[in-house]
Image 1: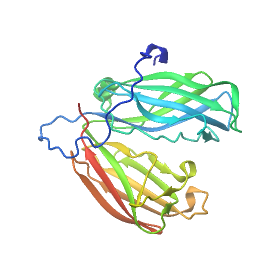
Image 2: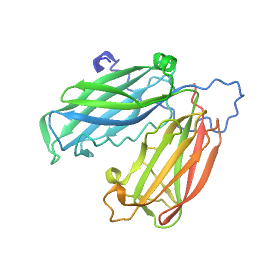
Image 3: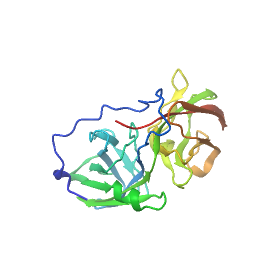
Length: 289
C-alpha cells in the first residue's frame, strides 16, 4: 500500500475504452484470455465522525489496459450517499468496462464527508490513499477463487475494499428490459459467479431508488459490467418488492438465471419476477489491448 501522492498527479485522464469492444469479433480457440478483478463492495468500517454521515468523492482503478482512470465510485458534494452505519455499502457505479489485470492493479481513494444534515464539517477529509494489489502473486499462489479484502487506514476512517481475482475471463455487460408490467421497478439486482458465494450489487432500490424503464423498456442500473471466468457461470438474481415495502425480507419474488460465458456475442433469458416480465441480456466481450 502506498500514499496516493506517489502516483503521477498529471495522470488523471479517464480511460477511453468502454464495454463490449470486441463483441462482434471472432478469436481462435488458442487465444489467451486475460485475468480480471471484480470489486465486490466497499465499506467505511470505522469513522472518526461516527455515524450517520454523508459521503462524496471518488474511488478509481488503474489496470493493465491503459493505466488510466476507471471510476468505481464517483459523487459530487451535492449528491452525497447517506451512510447510516459501518454495515452500509457504498453504491458502486462502475467499472464501466472489464478490468484487464496482467501485473498490479491500483485503487485510488479520495472520499470526503458532510455531517448527517448534509452540512460541511471543519475537516471534510474522510479517506485518502492508494491500494496496490499484486495480481501476479495472488494468481500464482491462490488455490481457489475467494473474496479478499484490502484495508486502508487513513485520514479519519478505515475503509475495506472487497474484491475477487478471476483467471481466463471475459467481460459481461448486463441489460435489463421490462417487457410487461409496471414501468417502475422496486427491487434489487445482484450478480455472482458460480464458485464465489458473494453478491455484486448492480442495483438496490434502498440506496439508489426506484428504476423507471425508458421508452424502449430498458432500466438503467447503477452498475452493469461483471468479469466472469470462462470456467464458471454468471448468476443474475432479480428480486422484486411491493412499492411500499421497506425491508429486503419483503421481496415478493426472487428469480435467479444462469448464463454461460462466451468470447463474443450475447445471451438472453426471459423471466417473470413479481408483476414484471423481463428480458435479461448479457453481452460478452474479451478484454485485451
